[in-house]
Image 1 (cartoon, rainbow, N blue to C red):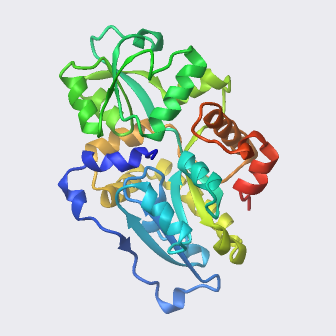
Image 2: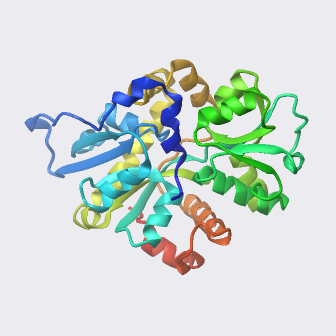
Length: 337
C-alpha cells in the first residue's frame, strides 16, 4: 500500500494527537440553513491544505450550505473509504492517491486543488553532499512507501538519471522521527522527507536543503511555471450529480482560505495549531516555507496535473491507459465548475 506523508506526521506531534478523534462541527442554526442543503466535508487532521480554515471560518456555510465538517486523524486510506462508501460527500486527499483510487474504480472527481508539493531532500550538515549527484553511493533514509518518496525518486531519475532506490545505500525508516534521529546521529548522509519534518531539521542546523521537490519538478519537466499538486479536493460522483454547485463553492471557499493564509497569517496559524496540535514554532516555519497554497482548476493547473499523472504512469505508480489520454483525463477525472 502506498501511503501519504500525512499518515506519518502523527508521530511528530506528540501524544496530544492520540486523543483526537473524528470531530464534527455543530449543526448550523435553523435560520442559517441554506437552500443548497447539507454537505459533509471531511479532511485529514494533519493536512497542510487550508481546509482547516474553511472549517473554522465556516466558508461553506457562508455560501449557503449547511455544512458538517469532520476532522479525521491518521491515514488517508480510511478517509478515501469514507468517501467511496458515501459516509461523506467531499474530502481533501493526496493527488497521487486520488488518481490511484480513480483507476481502481472509485466514484470520485477532482474538483479543485489545495496545496503544491511539500517534499525535499535534506543533506546532513558536513556530509559533503552538495548536489543531487553526490547522493550516489551515500546512505539515504526514506519512508519508501510514501507518495513523496515515489515522486522524488521519479523526478531524480528523470532529471539526473539517479535512482534513489538503486544508486544509493537506502535506509528504510518507518516514521519521520526515525529519519531525524538517523540524520542527527550521523548514521545517514541525507533524508527524503516533507514539511514540517524538513523544516525542523534545517531549523535545528542538522541539515541543509539539497533539493526541494518543486525544484526537482522544474528540472525534470522543463516547466518554469505552474505548481505540481500534493493535495486536491474530491467529491463523490453521486453527490456532485445532485449538487453541481458544490464544486464552484468549494473552490471559492478554498480561495478565501488561501487569502487568509497569506493576508492574515496569524489567524491561519492559530487555526492550524488548533486542528493539527503541532507546536507553534514548527507551524511558523512550515507556514513560511510552504511552496504554494492553491485553489480551483484553472487551465494552466490542469496542464500541470496532467503532466504529473503521466510521470506517475511513466515510472510505474499508475497503471491505467486513461493517463495516456489528456482528453479522457479532463473529462473523466476532473470536474471543472
